[in-house]
Length: 418
Image (cartoon, rainbow, N blue to C red; front, top):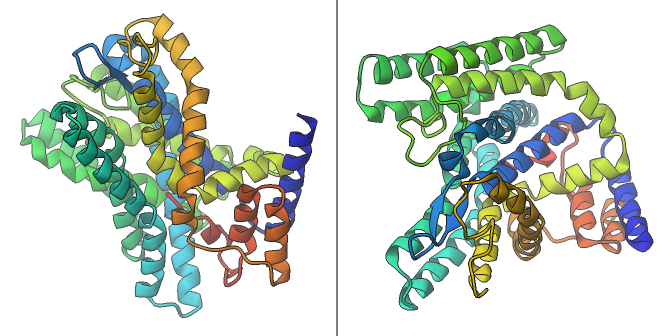
């Protein structure tokens, strides 16, 4: 254990030395917390059972509605889009100052987003075909593929908003918020067609994205606007849930007549405002916490592999679930119906196992995201190489933070993954 701590301390020290002095570490910390919220949320509120003979998906929120507050903690997508809007706006402004064309800028950013997707799609295409040829039921294969590919909707929306950054960077968040309210009024109040709700997939996430762009312009230099976002968003969310007929859960619940997330509703947008306000208020405490080399190294490493973690966390959970089927009986918290507090307690014990499986996926597929090979021929690369002697993850972090060809103008652009 002492040797492991010493090795981590060496990695953290080198990542600290490789980090530009002016980097806003609070932004990276917010992105890391948003990623962890999504991953832990999926692992806790998504269950795969054998109750119907084959593997099928369900949720503890369906059986225990009183767990809805859990979704308030782990549904962190608004923070993700807030950070994305800030980084995107600053990155585009810096690219224009350097004379980089829009096509080159957006092409580079979208490549970073979609490069690791090919590995996921390729593996699961082969897996699905193999399962069908092996005699697996079509419904089981469909449930698995749908579960692993469902997060990709988020990637498509994020990519579209990234591409639209020059158009929306100075847009007031009130405009997309008004669209969300109008769509919900038409859909729920005037009994309009259900398909109109999908307009909110763009409009709903445009709200935090434009807040992030406003943050990049200095709109939240003082704490008062952020506090108003938190209080106003929380009050609006409570009113919509208590008296507006919206569900309390901020994630989709199988079998529920209304989902706050699929597509986003006015309640989800209001909740997102509160989340963004809280995130903005936490900037200073996070910045202080990130002065600790160990904490900063962990955040930097997670950011450099954010897309890999996001894309493979469902596969990791399903791999553990599938391997568990080799046991002579259904494993509690893994294959059993999530309908009791005991299931929750046992499920928590499975989280480290899911994390270990995710670490295996990360080790195998992180190269698709980073898209670079580390070299040791220049001083900055030497830092990366020396960190690599303590661990490949540390070398990746150092290379990502000070690698060759990385402009120092927009330091947040170094880590841009969704």
